[in-house]
Image (cartoon, rainbow, N blue to C red; front, side):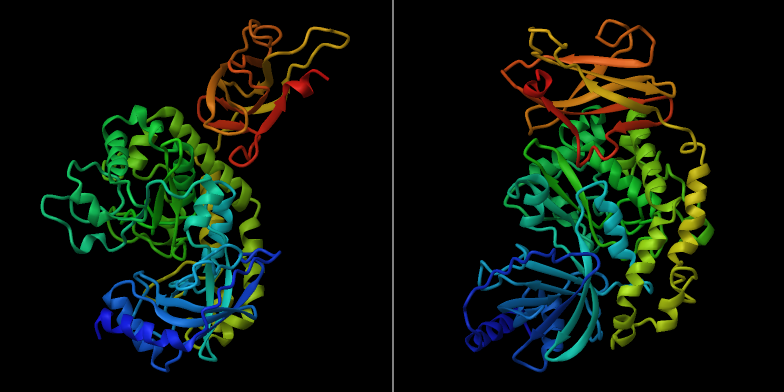
Amino acid sequence: MKINTLAALAFCLLGLFSTQAQTTDSDTDFYDMNTIQEINIQFPTDNWAELLDSLRYNGDGLLLGNVEINGRSFENAGVRYRASRSFSPGNKRNSLFIKLNYINKSQTIDGHPTLQLSSALRDPSMVREVLSYKIARDYMPAPKANYARVKINGALYGLFVNVEDVSEKFLTDHFGSSENAFFKVNPFAGDDTPPGCLNKIYGALIYEPHANCYLNNFIKLSEHGWDDLMELTRVLNEKPESVSKVLHVDRALWMLAFNNVLVNLSSYTGQHSINYFLYQDDAGQFTPIIWDLNLSFGSFKNTGIGSDLKLKGLQELDPLLHLNNDQKPLISRLLENDTYQKIYLSHMRTIVNDYFINGEYEKIARELQDLIRDDFGKDPGQSYTASDFAVSLTKTIGKRSKIPGIVELMEKRANFLHKHPKLAVFPPEISKVEVLKRAKFSNVPVTDFCVTAKIDRFPKRVRLMYRLGSDGPFKEATMYDDGQHKDGEANDGIFGVTIVPQNGETSIQYYIVAENATLISYHPSNYMWDVHSTNLQELNK
């Protein structure tokens, strides 16, 4: 059956449904990690599985159906199998994409017009995605995720991972815009390489001077942007010293650090350089947004160098993997910069300490398994047994696939990274962060921002990242311990710098970056989401 026939069928069925729109915005987060959502899909035909198979083969067509979420109706939604390598025709449990606003454009749930339901392929624990996204969100823009119990035409279809779509709402929430250049790496890019273009490079971001070479490797999700994407790859490869003009370097380094620590090799760090989006913010910088984490924690094992890694190789994956690999310029070009390499290693150290040395990841994983255990056992399409699920955190599952237990992998990996020479040293320690206030009983007002901080553990360079006001990119100012910058005595460990407003600004947002010979520290440590702030009114009280 051709796609136009299916499309005609879908619109013929439209008459069976009401056209009343509904927007459901509840007080609770639809992606609350500790929740299993109820999703019921009703198709007006019993051969829906065959129709969805055919639609998937023929493009991105949608099959019309009514959807009920936690008792709320969403009529005339569009449904298809997700475009991923996990799709298999006739499979009892294919991943689903649901477009709630397919016909009724205002129809959303908590503002989300689309749903991404993952079958958790090659994850007998069924916690890889939810756990991985939870960790990622602490450090970079990343989707939320929980679980959904899905029924189709009244019959249980299975337990799925409910992942927030990287769509207009996500972009607006994280970037304040959604209409700039926006791309997704094409996971099937190797299937049809144009003549004269590099073969099977996917989203490696290798520069190619011909625009048609990018058409196969990336899916454009915005109205424009090919020139911007080409410029990103050109600067990254040919002028890496200027890459911060076109790339949000810190967020890219967080993604790379995350991939390495979690042995997430179905990603840029692995064989195919896939499973991420690129969005260009209003400042002209692209940010990578991570995607498809069901193969994290070593479920996919190939780095692109040699054959698949065995368990020990996964546990001891080199933190500087691809450092000298020209086929991975997002890693090799960034990490050849000493400062960027320190930032990357510091980010790795932060993730290891926040989640793995202290066992926090295992606690979360076990809580998630407790939540879904009953539903996992009732899933009619689940390819893993309840026994597999029960030991999936501590033992390798599968004679051929050999999917490592998450704890089995990460307990030894965390110790390996904790003791690694690049990560075992201590970063600088930042304390006593202050902004100079008006002196007591003085009638001379403070008109600028003098920031000081105490830095220990052999700092080589200290910087203030700041912006006057509450938006726009952060600027950089060097802080000094020379007795000449309102920092007390020279070499007393107190660093200072004064920021003078130039256009009548009365407030400042800032964080501090301190660098020693090996690593970097930040204050506040969660500077990605929370920074220091003050204003002249407060300083003059």
